[in-house]
Amino acid sequence: MEHAANELLPAPVRDFVAGGSGYELTLAANRRAFEETRLVPRALRDVSACETATTLLGLPAAMPVATAPIGYHGLVHPDGELAGARAAKEAGIPFTVATLSSRTIEEVAGIGATTWFQLYWLRDRARTFDLVRRAEDAGCAAVMLTVDVPWMGRRLRDVRNGFALPDDVIAANLTAGSASAAHREAAGASAVARHTAALFDPSLSWSDLEELRRRSRIPLVVKGLLDPADAVVVSNHGGRQLDGAVAALDVLPEIRAACPPACEVLLDSGVRSGADVVKALALGARGVLVGRPVLWGLAVAGADGVRHTLDLLAAEVRDTLGLAGCTDPAAAALLRTRRAPDHAGRPRPPHGAHTAPPAPSSRGSQPW
Image (cartoon, rainbow, N blue to C red; front, top):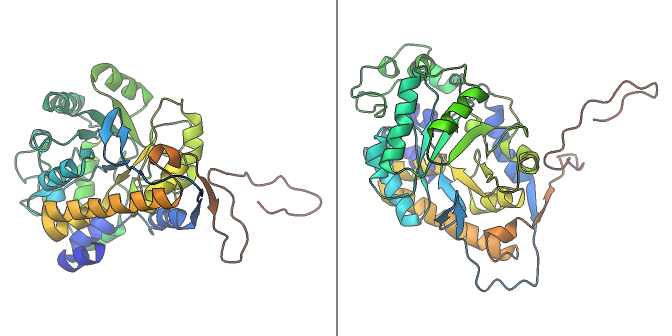
C-alpha cells in the first residue's frame, strides 16, 4: 500500500506524510527497534480458537489497534477522515479524529465508529475547552491530549518543498475557510509549521492537564510521552518532533512498569505489521495506534483502501498470535522477547535498559 500510494501522491504531499524531523534519525530508529525485537514463541498451546478481539479504554475492539491521530487526511483523498472512520467502523476499531482534521469532529463522529478526539493545547484556552465540549457532545469516547508538540518539529522535507496546504484542505475544526497561515506558501519554510506555531501553546504543563481532567467528562489519554515518569501513550510522534529521541518501543517496558496496573498503555510510532503489534503487546502495551499505513490505504482507494490495510493488519495479528502460541492479545503479554545482536554480533541491551556512562577508573575505560 505504501508503494502504491507513493505512485499516486504528489511529491510534496508524499514527503509531508512520510517525512520526519531533522535528519530523520528517530524516524529510522522506530523501525529499527521493531526489526531488532524478536519474539520467543511458546509451543504446545491450543490455538485452535485464536482471537484478536480485546478492549481499548473499556470498549470492545476487534483487534488491539486504533488509528493514530493524523491531520489533514484531505491531502490524500477528498473523502478524508470520513473514509477512514467508515473503514475503522467496519473493521471494529477506534478512529482518532485530530484537532487538525480536514473534517469536523461532528462529521467524523457521525459515521458511528468508536471515536477518540485528539486535542492540541491552543493558546486560546476558551477555544481549547470548546473543542473538548464539542467532542463530548458529538459522542467521542475519549479525549487524547498530545503533549510533545509545543511547536512543530523542523521537518526538512517540508522546509525544502516550501510546503503549504491547498485551498480545498482546511483545519475544519478551527476555521471555516482557507485563509490561514497554513495556506500561504513561502520558499524555505513550512506553512503548516508557521500556522501551528501561532496556534499551539508551548507553556502546557501538568497543571493544565489537571484542569482538563476536571473539565472533561470522558476518559483522558495523554499522548507523546517517552519518560517513565509519564503515561499513557508511548510515542515520539512518528519521528516527526525531536530528532534523536529514543525509539518509542525501547522505552515501553519502563513506562509500563511505572504505571499502575489498571492504567492502559498504548504505543505508536513505527507500527507497520501485525508482528509489530504483538511485539508491542509483549513489551507491555494494551494496544497500538497505526498512522501512516492508514493514509497509504486512503490515498490508494479511499475507505476501501483503508479497510484493506486494516484487514491485512488483522490477518497478520492473528497469524502472529497463533504462531507465537497465544490464544488472544492478553496472552501476548506473557511472551518473552530478545534483541537481535548488532552488526558485529554483540548482544544488545534489553528494552528499557539505559546504563549511565561509567565513572572514571584507574583501570582504564569500560564499555557502557
